[in-house]
Image (cartoon, helix red, strand yellow):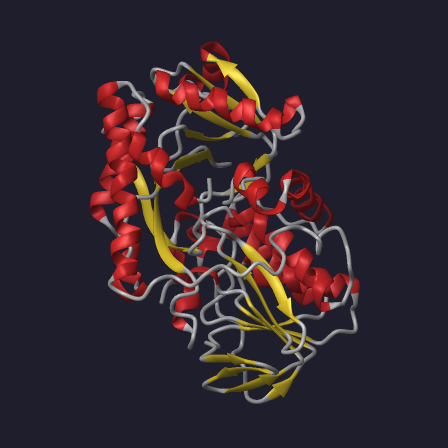
Amino acid sequence: MRYQELSYWLSTVDESLTPRPPLPGDTDADVVIVGAGYTGLWTAYYLAVADPTLRITVLEAEVAGYGASGRNGGWCSALFPTSLPALARRYGRHRALAMQRAMHDTVREVGRVVSAEEIDCDWQHGGTVLLARTEVQLGRARAAVAEAHEYGLDPGDLVLLDAAGAAARCAAEGVRGGTYTPHCAAVHPAKLVRGLARVVERRGVTIHERSPVTAIRAGAAVTPAGTVRAPVVVRATEGYTPALPGQRRTVAPVYSLMVATEPLSEQTWARIGLADRETFSDYRHVIVYGQRTADGRLAFGGRGAPYHFGSRISPGYDREPRVFAALRRVLGELFPVLGPEVPVTHTWGGPLGVARDWSASVGLHRSSGLGWAGGYVGDGVGTSNLAGRTLADLIRGEDTELTALPWVQHRSPRWEPEPLRWLAVNAGLRVMFSADEAERRTGRPSRRAAAFARLLGH
């Protein structure tokens, strides 16, 4: 397999992506981590920093960054898949606000480590602008700011923009306003995950690649080549979790796809904006997301690919020509300067993990030593760092502000068996597409989308 072909990001890392040696046979460790993406590597990093004597082994089915960590949109954001109101209903306002502030701190923490460990990953802390291009979307922008202030966030955490203010940051067609938050950085995600892998190795962590785990149980992670025995076993497999025995219904792997243009001229960027490499999206229901890359491309992605029956994952699902064409069309609608004559040079995709209640979680079962984190719903670049720090505290038996956060030890219900799971996930996708179309046609908020919002953690 040519790992460079999996995404634009992996094609532009400055290394060969030659796999590290696989697990040679049975061995022992203090902690074994399944998955060398962000979650697994951040957990290894903070454990190794806290206690350099720990024997930590990371097992990866392919290579570090093979999954979402090497294919995502490059937003290190403070986004959490469960909204403040939903968290407040479940845990109270104080704990909901603590969760959001922890996410704000997380963006700064990732930037601190990137600087301290000299990880060259095109980090730029430029914030996020969400555009409103219709009156309905502008209403959602106003409501988002009012909600943030109602729940106690600072005025600078989410700022309402008028049309001129929004266009000054991102000059998309027909912008009527929007919001801006400073709590996001643009990053080259593959450089981040590959750099983090090298950092943890320097700190004494062992990474075995091309070592697929076929079973996780108390005290052991099993591979075809041997078993790693350890009192603590951490599952950090996100969208690939359903492939493990007994985990088929833990998360639903939903695909997100991306395109990237050729490097654009400075004249073109002057018409688009994003001068501080702000990440950007808008207030439609079907998520789109983009960033200006360090080498001057526009990388743009979104949902729209179907969920596949039985939680199946296949390299063929990374390529959906219909979705790529739709993304290219939306890109041209947002920025007419990017007409059909501007080449798209890269297309790619991959699965992300969605829990049944749309709630990310992290935890450790103390009696069995089994730990887990995931269900990020595409917001994992930042959230995985918070998960890694939290798991490190839990594994070391520390009671901290992080271990008291409301997502810790949360157990999401299992997804329904098939065909109900297939019907539910794909029906939800169709509802959101139809809601955007209805709002465009009528100029009124979609009732169907509002009814579906609770199922999405809002």
